[in-house]
Image 1 (cartoon, helix red, strand yellow):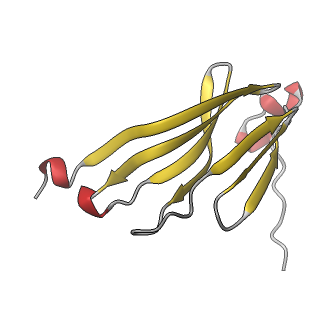
Image 2 (image 1 turned 135 degrees about the vertical axis):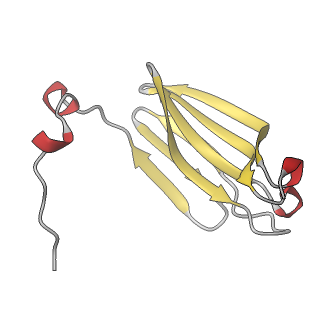
Length: 116
C-alpha cells in the first residue's frame, strides 16, 4: 500500500524562535513521521541554527492520547539552553570548538579505547 496514509508527512502546527548568543533556537510542535497518519500523536523538537546549518538538538514523540512528553519552557541565556518535557528538565551548554578541531577529519581525531 502507499499513498497519503502510508507516506512521509511533515508539518508544523506551532513554532517559536529564540535568538541568543550562539545563534537561534527553535521549538517546533508538529508531525514528522512515516506510516499511518491517524495513529501519530505528534512530536516536539528543538533545532539550533548557526551560520549556514541547522542541528536537531532534541526530539520527543508524544504518547498516544497523552499530553506529554512535550517540549515546553524553552529558554536560552548566554550559551546555555534549557527546557522541560513534562517528565524531565534539560540543560545544554553550546560552546564553539577551536579552529584546529573544527577542520580535523575523522581519521585525524584521536580515538578513545572503550572502557570496561
